[in-house]
Image 1 (cartoon, helix red, strand yellow):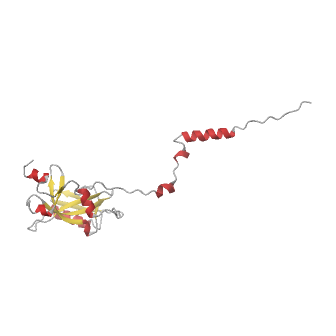
Image 2 (cartoon, helix red, strand yellow):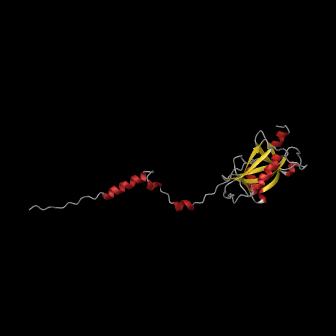
Length: 209
C-alpha cells in the first residue's frame, strides 16, 4: 500500500508582505506616507520675521488699526521725494538747518487685517496752527482707529477723507509682541535716515547731484 507523504507548502506570505511594504515605501502618494502626526505639527513654533515696514497711508480698501499705546506714535520731521515715492526720516538737529525742506508729521504704528505692520505719517498743523481738511480728517481717522477698525477713502469733492467703520465685529489685531516702536522705525527707515547736511537727499535738493 502506497504511503501518502505530506509535502510542506512554502509559505510565501511573509515575502509578499515584505514586497508590499517596500512598494508602499517607494510610493510617495501612498496614504501611509502622507499622513502627518498633527500633534507634532502643532508643537512646532514658527516665528515670523518682520524685515520690511512700509511708510505710507492706508490703502483705500484696507481696514486698519492704530496701536493703542501712545509710545507707538511720534512727531517727527520727514522729507518726501514724490517722484521716487520715498520717505526719509530727518534728525531734529538737521531739520533746524534746512527750513522749508521737510514737513512735520505724526508717525502712527498701524496694522491691517492681513497683519501687515506699517507706519502712517499724518501731517501736523503748521506753525500758524492751520491744517488742511485732508490732514485733519486723516488725524481723526487715526484716532478712531485706536479703538475701531476703520477704512479711509479720498473724497475729492469734499477735499477730505471719508472714514468708514467696520459694520461687523472684527477680532482685535495681534501686534508683534517683540517689536518696539524704535525697531519699527529702524526697519522702516533703514538706509533712509538724514543724519548729515551732506546726505545725498539734501545734496539732490541743493542741485549738487
